[in-house]
Length: 515
Image (tube, rainbow, N blue to C red; front, side):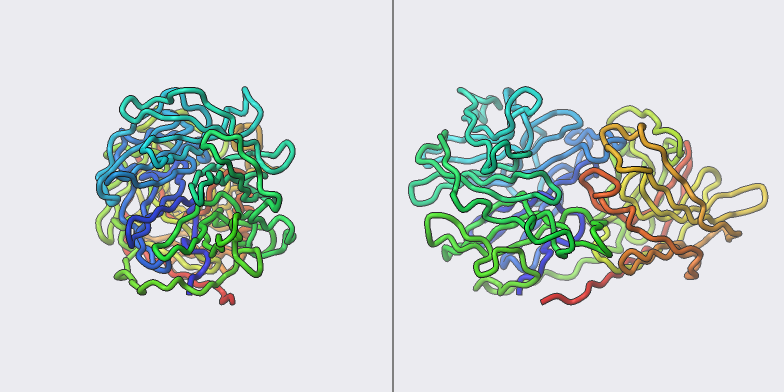
């Protein structure tokens, strides 16, 4: 069976392509480093991470203070023996692409595309071999929509006029974005997302006999949305999709969506889901029979090819990220041991420090929360200065943490809840007050095991296996905290020059059965 979510945890904006019998998929990473994970499958059921497209600091300058900045909406395509990943770094660089002969890497240095405005770029090669690019308009200067133009990959620039191809299915559609072009039966089909990435998110489609348009919208739009199912439906804000055709002619769609936890709360952010598509007629029909994304689907008629299990508790596993572009001395990761350093006091409650980019990375090393019920723990040695601990991080303001410090009276452990008040605007975080509550404080040894466990929104903060505090975690949902990202669990240090060691990380999780 195909189980949803296909990629659980914060893996939004999926893009997929097929090369022979192999499937490759990438997702957004925003301000986390390395950027744009690459996944591989041979049956659409089992997926293995091969690496990242952007795994070198020179490829990915990031400003961690803008956590919903960074890398938006990558597209992966294959042409003439070469893989292309095109995306936008909104924290600098704009639209660019990298290439690789092997999707596991190495990937090239970035090719910045001159004359390409907007976000969510995608490449399309026509039958004559010419390459075209589509992306969003610059909404500050134009009516929202998506444009199409030729691109010269030898000179990394747009050639000819950028043609406004479509403005979406709705009149004055909000956020028409995520465009992809496909050619089928003599038509060019333009697939986009519209309605924003929350309740009204949707996938719509148009077509034209000419690649440059004009495009005519499908009268039955949207072809996929959950906005009509209500705020208590367990899978919500479905949109931002890409299509792939199998060798036998069958079609599938990958899209982002969120799972609700304990009400309208999306702690894990936007995840990758999959649905079958019937494209036997002139227009695609997504999830035939129900028209909504289901928890389970029959798998395609492909040989089942599972990959060997990966030890994600290994600090060197590909699932781990830093927040922002790290300096070389920020961390040293070994299989079951981690040394983490911080150049700044990034957990201060009153202000966000100003650090240079790209080497302004705070002391955080984490992996995605992937289950609504989970337990995660690590053993740390108390730092000589500053604070070290374990954290469930939604953003720099909204998080739960268990921190350890040295004081004149000895080693102290604290359970802390940090929340920004009011619905924040992540573009202007300083305009909102922040509450930092110490939920528990007690003596600890120099070496202490700290952790966080959750069942739904009931979060337990742990010291040496014992619960020291209980907190409702609903403030960790993206609809409350703002921004586009999902929760991470991980190790942290804070304080200029602070350093700590961590070992024996463990993460276990489970989900309720569906279908």
